[in-house]
Length: 172
Image (cartoon, rainbow, N blue to C red; front, side, top):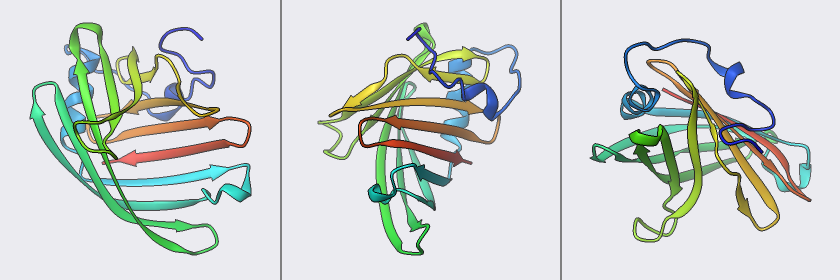
């Protein structure tokens, strides 16, 4: 797979637009700092996984330094069958402005033991794609991200022997 591209090319479909005068990394970084809520939908072709549903919640952004911030997400997840569950996640974002890349880590085991998820590279003024898929067991995770001044949209695609899932996030 070519650096900075997913097989689907979804990022270009999410939000069109051009930002002039600033680097893609700084443009995205400014938008991430202002996020306060998340909405998402998950669809799986494998009904047994139970990942079909939608959720919404609150996002608390903590800026650690000029190149590091965390998202603490809490909310409710509702399966398509109507079951409602609470969820929480904590992510760390790291900006590498020199390379126009951003790393995303999951902090499920704490800040000192992050799970490296994805490195994203700018593929346009407002679009980012996975450099290398995240592999978990036999599953491959890719991410496409697009943004404007007030929203960030992310599309995770998870493919493996037992998974064929798409999770669409809308942050604002």
